Amino acid sequence: AIVGTRNPSMYGIRMAEKFAEQLSIYGIAIVSGMARGIDTAAHRGVLRAGGKTVAVLGCGLRYCYPAENFSLLNEIAKTGAVITEFPSYIKPVPENFPRRNRIISGMCRGVLVIEAGQKSGALITANFALEQGRDVFAIPGRADEFTSKGTNQLLKEGATLIENVEDILDALNLEVRKEEEKKEEKPAQ
Image (cartoon, rainbow, N blue to C red; front, side, top):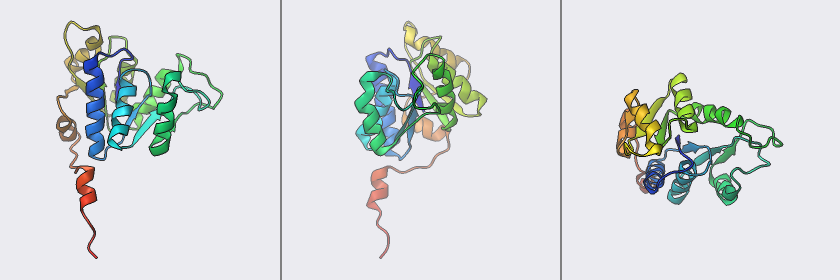
């Protein structure tokens, strides 16, 4: 999973897109919550790479939240999945999102947090991940940025510091090949 603030810096957006795109090239599906900011950037990075992404909604399928992500939701549905535990008529209300975050972390082997304030929903996802026995990763941020306070705190508490995709692959003990390499292999005839 890739999660983070709804109000990211350009650096945060760039990192979310980069990590999502690169992990996708290795055939790893990315799960996120389709929220503004880091979630949106992660989903877009996956789609740009032609990978698979899962959007977990905090409302019923009748609603798209945020509304500006309607085309993104449709694009994800064509090649990945849009899921929710809520009946279709349930509106996006604040108490739904922590429930959604537990599903995001529960679907994944690890959660990468990119830019999160001290009271961020991304930290709720990270805490669920720890409770579920998942790995928690964080990209360090600038010490003087509000959106780095949560991620830097996660690092102080033992989250794995991530600087590149290989750090995640190593931490999860994954031996993967890029999708292009898999496509180049042709079965014997």
